[in-house]
Image (cartoon, rainbow, N blue to C red; front, side, top):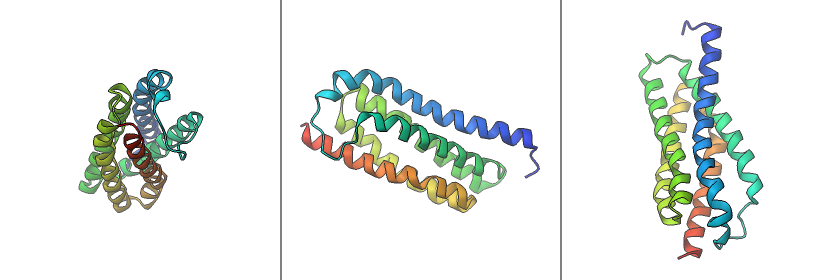
Amino acid sequence: MGTSRALQILQLIVSIIVCQLAGLIGALFTARAIPAWYATLRKPSLTPPGSVFGPVWGSLYLLMGIAAFLVWRQGLREPRVRTALALFGVQLLLNAAWSPVFFGLRSPLAGLAVIVPLWFAVLATIIAFFRVSRAAGALMLPYILWASFAVVLNYLIFLMNP
C-alpha cells in the first residue's frame, strides 16, 4: 500500500464527494418533476413518502463512497482493484442516469431500461468489491436491497401508467 494517512483521507473525501455528486444530478431532475409529473402518476401502495428518498439515497451514497475508498486504498496497481472500481464507475453512471431518464424524460419505461442494467452493475460491483475488501462489499449490500426495491417500484409504476 504505502500511502500516507493524508492521502487516504483525501481519497476518502474524493470518493464520498463523487458519489454525492451522482445523487445531486439525480436530485436536480427529480425536484422539477415531482410536483408536476410524478405527482400525477398512479403509484403502488408500497411507495414510500417522498421525504424518505433523500435521506435514504444520501446514506447510500455515503456508504458507496466509503466502500469505493476501501477498494481504492488497496492500490490501483492491483488488477482486481481496477476492475472493481471500473464496475463501480459503470454502476455510478447508470445510477446518475436513472433520474434524468425516468423524471427528465417522464418515462417509467425508459427508467426500466436504465434501472435493470443498473441492478446487474451493482451486483457485479458488490462481487468485485468483496474480492478486494469484505467491508467494502458489505457496505454495498444496503444499496442493492434499495435498488431491488427501486426496480420493483419502477416496474409497478410502469404497469400502472400505460
